[in-house]
Amino acid sequence: MELNLCYGCMELKTDDLVCPHCGYNHNAPSLPSYLAPGIMLNDRYSVGKLKSYNGESAIYIGYDVITQTKVLIKEYMPDTLCVREKGSPAVKVNPNYVAQYKTFMSDFVELNKVLTKMRTLSHINAATDMFGANNTGYVIFPFVEGITLGEYLKKNAGELTLDEVKRIFPPLFTTFSLVHNAGIVHRGVSPENIIVTKKGELKLQGFGFCISDARTANTELASELYSGYAAPEQYNSANWQGTWTDIYGISALLYRILTGTTPVEATSRMSSDNLLEPALINRSLPPNVSKVIMNGMHMSGEMRIQTVTELVTQLFEQPEYNSMRLSSSSTQTITIPKQSLRNGGGYVARQGGSTAVARTAQPIKNTRISRKSIFFTAGAVTLFIGMFFLIVMLNAINDRGVSGPGSEPPNISGGIQSDTTEAPESTVLEIMTTTTTQRPHETTGAPIAQVYVMNNITGKSYDLIKSNPSYDSLTFEPVFEFTDEAAKGIIYEQSIEVGDRYEGGAEITVKVSLGPKFIRIPEFIGLTKRDYFSILSDAGIKFDEKELQTNNVQSGYVASLSKEPGEMIDVEEGEMLTVFIAAKPPETAPPETTRATRGSTETETEQIFTIDETDIYITFW
Image 1 (tube, rainbow, N blue to C red):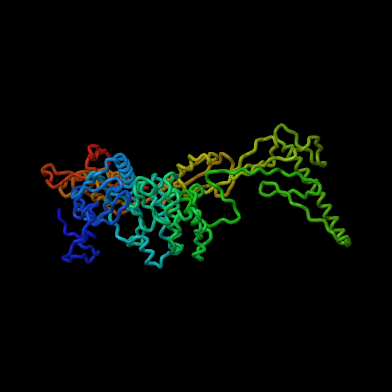
Image 2: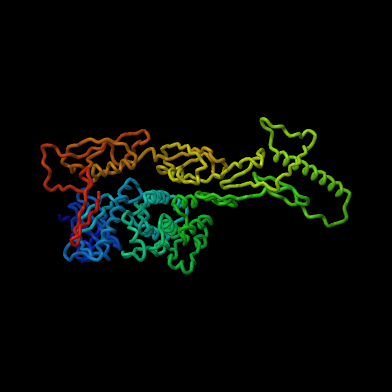
């Protein structure tokens, strides 16, 4: 199918040899290792100019002839394992690497399968179609009008203010968090993989995701590592990678945005870590923000901030000074002995449930004492003696226990009751963060009540917190509500305040988000019934299905909705969306030019590729 389009930008072609829109030369030769412009894929997508390639895949601009929109086409093309057949779009695999080619293709398919389920997220450019052809696989992404974050920074003096970051970055942080919850690590966080749309919003490029071997050094694929943003563990395939790997990249991105300077590459920091703190470059940056960014770029993955939630919390919460940082996943126990009064030792002062000893002042060296000083000293001695007897009395009461049913109350009417039992030298008080303390009315032989200090669990997944053994001391009472304050499944309010003490077994009421009350209806054009129903289910939108007989839309695809895409639907009230699925009219034969595309049946299909007489079975849908 010949389209009158420029292969450089997929705009209408002019008579000029060089496109006035993008500067593409229509007589320019294409690289023989990649698809030539003009090739049709799946009878639907016209391939345009090669935009980029790495050790895993190649990216082309393309055009969807069904929806008549621009797209981006990602082709699985590990050039260290295969080559393009001369004069053909087919891929030929090196016979020595067939097993690796199959394995990496399986990883490629599974990764992009998960990404297709994120099409409802407005800040990620997720895949919309997948299919197999030419002995390889293809993934289709919508084309987003905008510029890369790197280009955007160049147009804004090379950096942004902290207030600008706080304004435009939170949706992107949420997107990273949801991607991590789905079990995906990006490994390619950089200004080149983030688009700034015409509305000024940040959008994560879906084609920027790659399988792990393509973003790790010393693997069978040519690695693509972004200097200054790649974490240290990406330079050694033996090291563990995880969410903390992306935390390094995100922190490095913030470093670049807030200072205008690209961070030192991790390999250079391994031998001599001379990375300057952001606050030393940008003097207007708050010290706590600077330190959080540095913690996010710690060379040790274990010592680094681990999750996006933790990173955002530390970045944007007010810093707490003169306080101990509590870990949400561990407890600390501090043992403090209960001090007994000794001659010359001072007096006992109780502070916050613990016991401290304050020393008396040094003796006066001047031997000349005035009469006023004598009276003052005598008064102080009298007060000291009174305090002594009062404390001894209280200790005696504390050690003997307060009267209860069946016990004789201590005799304090005529002075301190004598007791031949010697009080213990010290009693152990446990202050746990988790904290344990002994109450004044309990005897030393009674069980010690455990008292804990509450951590901040807002912004964290309710399921993860509930299953965390560190919170076995709490009885959770969840309240599930629709809210725009947090993503679905995230705690956004807790009844026990951060820093408050509570006893083991205490009940805590947590408000857990069911997601926003109103959800924007996703686009349906070019989607099959199965695909669209999956998107609606993931978004929590209730729907029913009706058949619509038409020749204008391919059978099995979504033809229309009871409400327009982009409108809001009230999921809290259970508002129902009717989805009309195209069906062929009984009297009308199917058009000869129509070819079923992926997902047009209810069962999954297998794409079979023959490579050197070895079949590859990859399930795409």
